[in-house]
Image 1 (tube, helix red, strand yellow):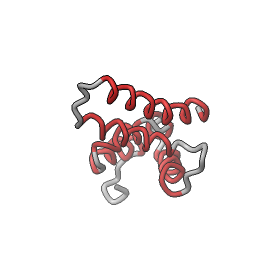
Image 2 (cartoon, helix red, strand yellow):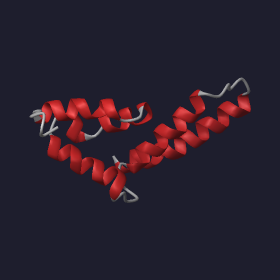
Image 3 (cartoon, rainbow, N blue to C red):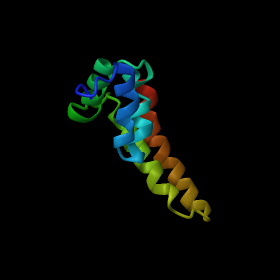
Length: 99
């Protein structure tokens, strides 16, 4: 990106084109991405993936992976829906508490 002389804004906007679609939402929800600040965005990614803590944003990744997994399933049974709802809420509670 530096060799191509991309601006910080261009770096932030371009990098998400090279990641798996399941991760786009997570990356685009990070403060550095939202503020188009490349340095902050890199720090956010390190916190998210390299040095995750119990209160870090790492649980967003788990929630996204969980939701993506269930988009492929047919839930035509009330029990399946209740189980999904219960598990989703468990992931979401961590996010609400850390938010």
